[in-house]
Image (cartoon, rainbow, N blue to C red; front, side, top):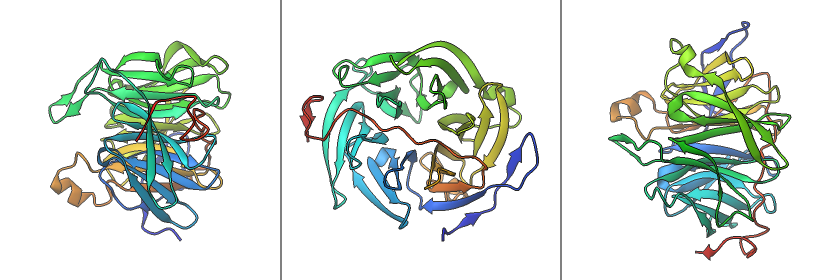
Length: 338
């Protein structure tokens, strides 16, 4: 039985229905992000970015394990070849992480990105159906603000490992990505723009073209606060995105640009979303307390937690795994092991 069920507000634009249920899945950390569902083993991975931690939550037993890397870590994606081999972003590098049976790990640097922006870091990423890694960076951010136009979205494959392909640049904060069910469209978020853009996507070549705005939060400024962060898609090709500073997850139709649903989350800074569970009908939601004042942390005791949302009357699709290495010792790609 899942504990700590929250009563939430659900606004459904087209019709009235009973609201979904939100429950606390994993207790708060500083900045939970990048949830990833490994359907092969019923495992939920997520990161605590600034602490350099990768968490592995066993859905069947409700137990969580953690390993710590040396730096800021995001995202984390299982490998196609080995469920214990993860591909992650670490500072500005792409690394392979082998999760051993005792919550320890081996780490190998595969490539380092954005040498022209040494203070930038990796922020988010996903794999496409062919196992290519799409991974994006963001400029340096501190209390004085974000360094703009120092983010890049890269495509990383074994042949391009030493010189990853630049797909979109410059951006500010490379963030949420999702492919539609037909796999011919890529949706992408550069957070400060408050937009989701759509690209025509060629799965065979891995190329994108024909950019258009699919959703613009500024059209709903009277109803939506914050900025779009992580994103996923359901089997009906509707997008679900986290609102950082907005205390909610929203569902939108990217074809019409219509806001369909608002699901309130008991944390102001909602960071990302991902479908999971045995039937892919649980929406996992990560949140942060990193930027909250002490007073706000007291008002939002669950900030930083990972939540599950049920009763959304749709489901997601299996998340793609990265196809870069057969094992951490595979020398056909990459360089340094630590």
